Length: 359
Image (cartoon, rainbow, N blue to C red):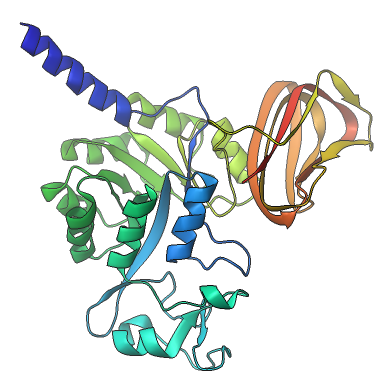
């Protein structure tokens, strides 16, 4: 009997670990690694190392085949946007398609674009990225429709990886030999149909979408009731805040940051019951310019207005009843800041807390 109870407890713990936590900050994954402006290239080993510095538990990467069937990491069909000529760092004038170029040419003729010459490295292979994930303790999320890439991930990571794709046959294939996490993009499929489609696969399951007008609180609640994950995929401002408010448990993002656990803020701003009159502003700027920084802003509010984070991200506010607001934003080479401007009806901020972090 004790053995049966122990086995049941172990199974319950495994299921619990896979089930989304509804009352905590969502988990944030770094989209194409932790790429930063013109410094840290997307889909790069450096992006994995910087993701580890920021505390991201997982990074998403895009897998492509070269002409000679080598698995490399590149989002676009061409390399022109993210790479330069290796010889003189000039822009690549004619389109260079990954699938029409040999691995040797990709590795020797071109480098990833970065203002830092030391980061102008060759296109990484899938194996190199997986090795970096393993070294840095980062969970790799393979955005891939290439079944062979799943086999490579399983070889290097065991079950510690995610299969992320819109092709259902691909996630079914991954599940045939792996207990990895599955994130399926269901397009316009309803939440109930999504659950019905995924459930037979078993294991750790979830959905992901870029459609911010589809992933609402009702959709999320249906998925979570079935013990499945929901991922908002690169929602733009201000829809990232909506996904957080509606309890999406994974935020795949180019800018969101909420990894506060175990970190002490280098500055804070707290306030209670701040009445901001129509047209007036209330805000705070970190006292230092930070090379790598982050801001987490949370408060309850009543009224209407707009929040601006770091002078560039604008979030409208409007509610006649008390509502919560939470965003996390990473930054590079600036003093993180926020400003709240009240609309015509004014705005009351209740229980505001802004935390500034040096990363």
